[in-house]
View 1: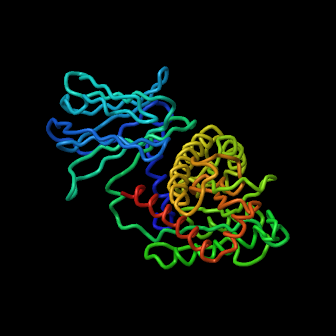
View 2 (view 1 turned 180 degrees about the vertical axis):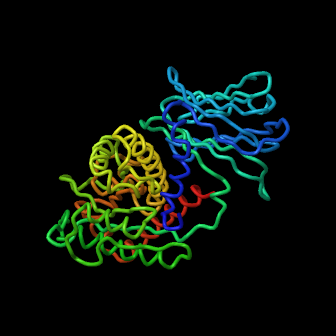
View 3 (view 1 turned 30 degrees about the vertical axis):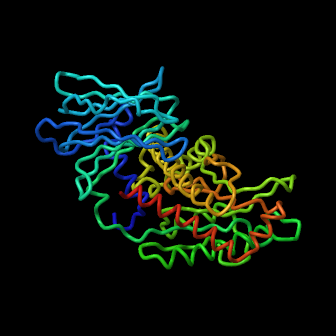
Length: 391
């Protein structure tokens, strides 16, 4: 288990009890339960347009069930052995995603809380143990998405263990005979991506607990799938592909971030299932060679769904920091079927740092100082993501 990457170790926790996930529409997350607990307060926060966090402050450890319903869309949480609370009565429980919160007593002892949604969302729940600032907390993270709403299991004790070095694979787009986009002054995308990648590697490597590897060290052509293979060879926890966009109009500008689309994930799952004898390390070391295609498909779907969700959250954190050093072309993470984003077990994003076809942005991209700012912004987003993920 020690040789597994962070993403694979967390995913191994997620697929424990696969049968329950396959046959049921909900998952139960348990902690040690004591006497009947009280819900002391409810906090709602919106970090961006498509992400809402609801925190239930509790007087003690509890068990809870979480499941989703449609028509209308809602997330239902059953808080076991918890008293009804006036903390749920408020008009301040609305965000871009959340329409409101209501509750009722179930089985004369459990508190059922319903989160009414304005659209589809994929929830993730986890318990936090008391610290110097707060007591027991149940956290519900909801991200607007078209993914199937499968709650992801987490384990607080596992997260509290000492983490190994976080390995980040940096992929400078294009290279060698593939120059990528070319600016009006002759600036080549392959040169910009390599320059930013080297600065990003330097920033990452100077931070304790982080390590960076490049998919290409110089001006060489690397096949797209080989880039992912190299990252997986180094057991990378995150994959960051760097690019500089181009458009026919020189006025178009701004950065954007992409994660894998569902269509891209589906096609990649089919390829992995066809090669399942080589895919055992994709899902926490569980071999697929003795599984039929249906079970293999379920395992990979679970892995890819969790990975895409992590990628969307990583992309959102990076995008937020990139907006501090330049304009954004898209203020939300986009999704597409890029080949370099298709590792089922490794959160991956593709960053279009700017439009090299825009004269002003071409000049900035050539600036070593601005390249360093981009690198620092990307790493700031990565650190924010990892802090939230391992909190």
